[in-house]
Image (cartoon, rainbow, N blue to C red; front, side, top):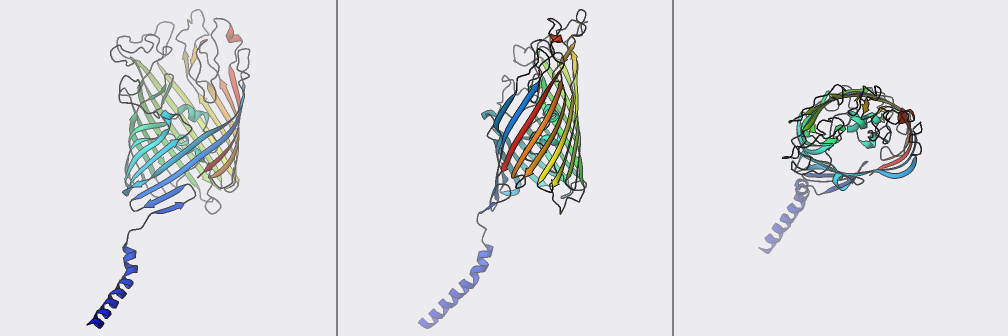
Length: 467
């Protein structure tokens, strides 16, 4: 009997050893960690986490030339700074269709630390649902990562029109995988005004659910973007595909439409009310709605990149309540605003994937109108009011890619010319690279001393590393 028990035990042990490989194949996989080209990747069954950090260290020299006795000569500077330091966490939870992203911008204030914070249900390629905060997909240049721009900074015109980050609910999708014939985003978001004279969305700050804080007041924004990439997807502001693929032509066309509805408070634009709030609710009697449209095109071939975009914005200003606005004979005030601009960037890799050169030409035509404090009967020329100066931007850039986007050195030279409008003696204009001077009224003769143009020379040297 003992011999039979020994034989049976040996057979059972052998069967267990033979079955062990098969059982190991059926067992769930353990955690995996990998260091890729961009960041750290951690994955396990039903979970994935990608961590990427982007840092941009920059040296800037700016020389301002404001001609005339009341110009702004002397506001020159040389400055080292960490322009961006961002860490992004992204991946999926439970299943690949449940995606998430969280991006923290360490150089921002505590109220603007969080840039991306959204959840996306990737149901299928044609229809996905997202909720939270992210970069608003309205115009191409702003929506393209700052780590893959032609110049170290986006252009002047983009900075005058983009809508930044926004909180809301949206759907997106695409038709076609490697060749997306149609990509779309459509959503509804908070309408948080950038400023009382800056009619763009700015919803990056943490805000509360209350009417009295002046942030959430039933204001809304609706956004739509459509793109087509019929020859393959265009992703960056330059063509770094290399010799194996860069002979293939790529091009895409995009359209963005945005409607922003908010209250605002500015006495110069609505002098009869001064944007005064109603006593009971603390909400402004004055409101605005802005329609913004952009159309852009992109071409890539043999290391050559060409990007062009056109921008148009129309703002209607309204009064509500008992103090309806009624302009008098002096044409004080303004019924609406209309701004327009275009951008053109072209780049070329002299050495494929290594040495890139590029040029930029941007132009902004900002609206001007009757000054609400002017009296044209006695001062017929003191009638122009401007929120932004008409601006032309020209630039040259050279980049050396040590290790692709992960380690890149860029040198930019820009010339910016601002044609100034009248804006009284105390008000200031909105600028992107500076606070432009204004052309004073005729009250004290300063208009003969101040310049009608303000010019900037900007030189930037930046090192970018991504890990």
